[in-house]
Image 1 (tube, rainbow, N blue to C red):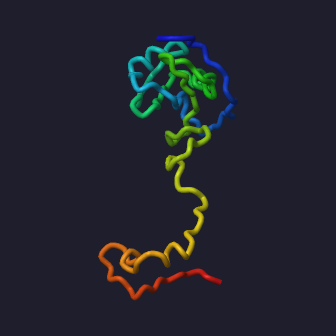
Image 2: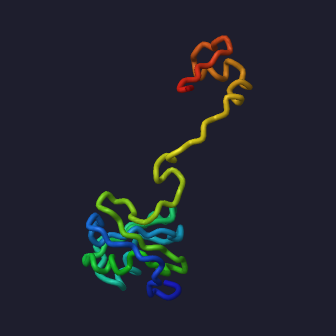
Image 3: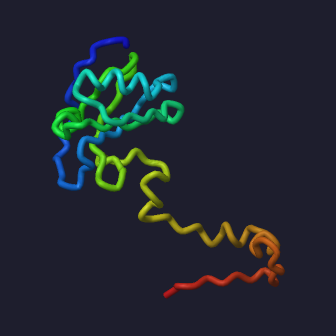
Length: 146
């Protein structure tokens, strides 16, 4: 293990009753971090009952026997094998209680800008018809106009 193992507070997360007792999401793991090294590293903070490294995907989970240990680490950044790893509480559904990181992990965006009509008009009728459907005579249906 490289570097200092002491946690550095980032931002405070309010503890909620929905938190999975003792379980933390670990974001920013190195691709070489193994489940065994997580188990060994985090056992310095308390008894680890479960650890899973998805190092190839950059995250993992650790569960402590004492939920107070997880609560004390929640919202901190810990050095694991030279990599700053963020510790976030996990809610009862296995999701991180921290803010989302973007992409499709948080679901579809709340608003999607409409495509301009001109972009449809510029396409040939066959492109508008979609897979296997017969092309129309260059007509398109535009619903919801007021």
